[in-house]
Image 1 (cartoon, rainbow, N blue to C red):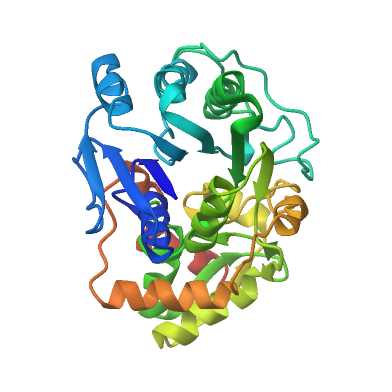
Image 2 (image 1 turned 30 degrees about the vertical axis):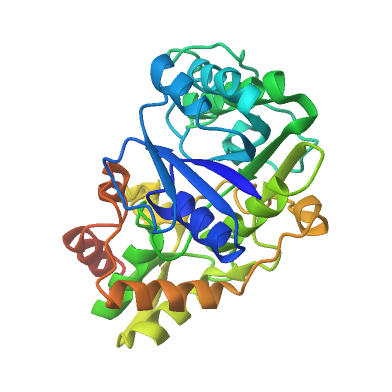
Length: 339
């Protein structure tokens, strides 16, 4: 099996490459070489996917059985379309990493692959879309919906769309799980949003990578939601963070209204917390039926802590600074709660 990975230097892209090498596959990585580090044993082609000349040069390095696109996160549909069209003669199928944000109903409604999608043309530029007053839908979601259309328009039944929610694990650059682990390590009174029984369903980066590789090796197209099939409660999640770090702390469960009164930002200042009812109601049964296997989230937590302890350093990314509540603000809220 010969595959092309767009990206590959960090987090999901790196996990895809490592998984492919473990299967004995021949791997080419295309990236700018500005962040992360591609594992040894990979043919690397340097270039910018926004450059027509670089895409043409890349296509001449083919043929590949499949491409796995892990690097289109902030790119316009038009940019994805240009890459898909340039590589179509050199690639058998395209596995595209998208997001649950492409659904009209996210995060307010439970989702299946039959849920309504945001509408965006395949050739839309970076200005297309908008973000709603309550934070949904998002311009990002419109852009990703257009990118999906670009892949489907070009590859048809040879295109596979993966729609993950939250991805965690070793190498995470966004900083959700690393922040909670470092906070647990500090101990003391730890502020968290009630109810403690709230289920969460993030998925391990290595499991997303394995499923992407499985789809690259198969025939037929389609879309798959990617979420954990066995959610755990936020209480279990934080308890395991405390256990693996050895933090001498206790969780203080605050009413969401109290957190909002103090201006705590959902999803970022309080990672993994959002009051919308559908945020952790993503049906991934189609992916499970197609082979998605999710390791226990407790394993993801432990492995991420081991990575951090071994001086794990995620690729620098501006989103990391958005996550986690400041210590002074946390203390102020805890004092107001008389904790």
